[in-house]
Length: 119
Image (cartoon, rainbow, N blue to C red; front, side, top):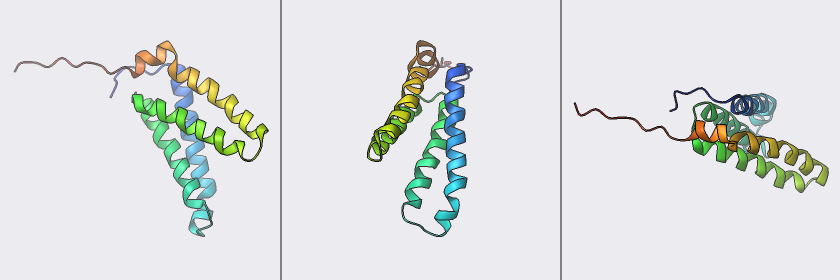
């Protein structure tokens, strides 16, 4: 875990993932209780958004890759509905990817080396 402070763009993206995940779980929870079709998948993807948000704030490099993959997945899925929906998701994907892969974010997600004592 990184003891450094995350850059502001990383914090913003992480908070967005947390908000989307929590709000999505709350929204889909009733359908999950009624065991509606696709409710498990919907809640699973929203839970994954929460996991991404938490681990982005913890400085885990895999979380930024998963965040971009999660959004790219939504681009592909929304393209089956309409190109307009896909365009909206792409409009979110681009700044998310830029925020998580900018030089400042790269330094934040870089693993820190710990000095081990010989004691």
